[in-house]
Length: 337
Image (cartoon, rainbow, N blue to C red; front, side, top):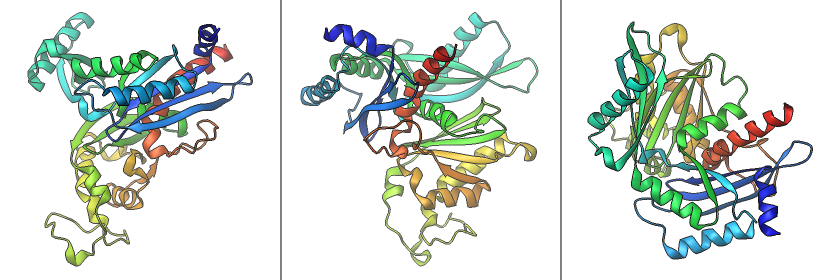
């Protein structure tokens, strides 16, 4: 009977497991008969490093949580912290799909300096203005990371059906949550402890990706200090921001500005920036991005995604909610059809 119930559950549930850098998060959102979505469960466990197999004690705790929620045997989507991926953009001559896939793989192996047998490589097409050329986003992730993530999820009693970069998953969620994100030029940033990923969208199509390394957890946790104690000789005045410690985020904001100037013309400057990740609720971060980049900056908001007893902080649940939203959209579309 339990197995039979899980078969039914698969048709009405959207489940995601997020292997974030700071925690392991799992969310299950259930569709009611009237089409509304309710969080059946959302739990958070200590971070599970994917450079090795999950510890037995951590796996037992994960399995117990899955069983307690009645999710055994259910399919789920998996997201992996973006700092575990290598990503870059490249231009190649125009060619057919088969040739392009082979060339993209060769380019990624050469550019990232990886062994072809040790990584999974994917590519996505981007708009290109150069005649006779095509632009690509290259992604590479170690097979060890994929294997450890899938084995942990299966050992806990779930059935993984997809694996995605956390920044891309968070973008899916932001597109669903924020009206107008697929209209015009929008900047989106997902911030993790070790990496911030900037994605530029124009009319719903990805235009540009830049991964910026840094110890953003340290920046987020830095104590407030006055301008007199600022020893960063490269910091700039961030008028009209009224915060003595806004310099904490200036390096990220300045690099973001350089990226936007590289890819955007004055007529296509983003109208706003949406930010996800643990620091995204930091008012100083949003004010610094606005002051340096010249656009309104807001945090991803989880309110309205689904109802439930758990109070979710969107700044940490964006990737999991974004991954789950793919099934929420698909099932809503099927229902309407």
